[in-house]
Length: 334
Image (cartoon, rainbow, N blue to C red; front, side, top):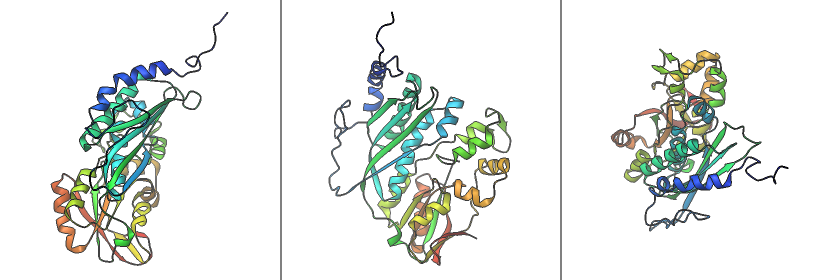
């Protein structure tokens, strides 16, 4: 006669998860400083820096980029990607990152995968100088198939500048920071386009295997943007994610002003490659992908040259890609 059914029999290994997380403690706590509560509690506690009067929080995921990463066995970059994505969202609001927490869900506990993801997050947090303060790992059999997983991150920061439409004026310049590729959006369409291709195949037009081009890391613009915020007034910023340049820049425009973009910047070859594969029109490309610009910053005309100098000095490829002019609250390409 079979014994009683256990939680593990149903697909959830609580003890295994506990053992694994214990081994990951060193990777997590290496991001801690004296202002962080001990690891392992029900919530992470962070002593706020002196002078912090307001905090902000953002939460996001890496979407179906995880499917390609799993297919290619390149999951480590996903841990770094989610930290970069959240940090970019915060600095676009004028916020300095303070701490990060993750949520990883999968159909079956995969110790190697979870270790790879957490180590990627820890390394990215260490580069930002913030703690990986907490997280959640959940096995969800019946919701995710055994090879699938999802990664979501939340990041808290302190407000250091007030950016947004209220500060944007006609004549302001729009500076673009170069992207490396898709970053963390547009993958449902991209995966559909390449589903019958050998992703390990070298593609001459990409200068790399197809899979490597698709999984190019999501850069963290936070250090460069924070350097700029510390040095001069910035009117607004936008992290170019889902919705592309039109869908994200419009969010930082007030009524009566239009963003006029001059698309002369270099476009990573993965975008024309995908466009040709799917015979996609320009409008579809612009509302789905970043097309070579991962973040935009709006500054006054008189500050633009200095802003470019600061951003380039911080290691970013930056250029003026357009300006703010009177008109309908929209984004046009000239």
